Amino acid sequence: MKQYFLLVILTLFLTACDQNSENMIRKEVLSIAEDYVTGNLSDTTKITLDNGTMIIGDDQKTYVIDPEKIFIGFIDSDTKKDAIISLLPYRGNIEVTTEHLFIINTSGRLLLIRTLESDMKILEIKDGVITAEIPEYSRNSPLFYCPSCWEVVKYRFVNGEPVRIE
Image 1 (spheres, rainbow, N blue to C red):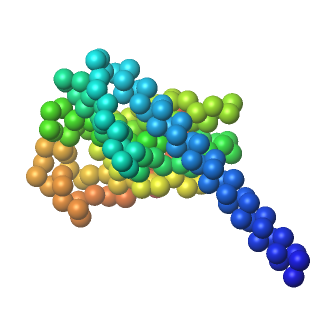
Image 2: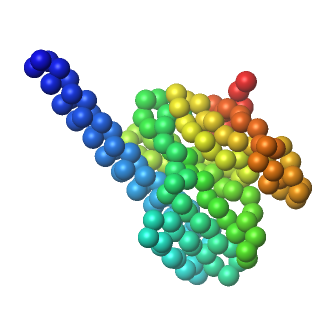
């Protein structure tokens, strides 16, 4: 009985530590995303909503940084958790191609190593595989917004690039 009790306590402790680690990663990813956006714009204004979503823009472009668009997992070949955050950019009221920031844990620090403009929607990162949905039609097609016209694909991060796998 004591061994079972110790196992439960150990499991709870490890779960709490992992959750705390992910919260720290999320905060750092949000900071990296904010620095990326403000570095690409001039004379920005920032609004932070109650749910943590940031809206940062200037007179040309606005970015929505949503904490729900952070995906944490093992992307490269090491055993340190990495992240991808998807930013929603707008020109005026029109959403333009989503920008994905690939943030890799290198030597204990999270570093932005790749940006990718793509209409893909990241679904998850698990065991080094990035699962995403990609549209079958271009953004200017009326079928772009058709829910059944999206394909689920898988990628691995190889030499700094997402590579589609079968």
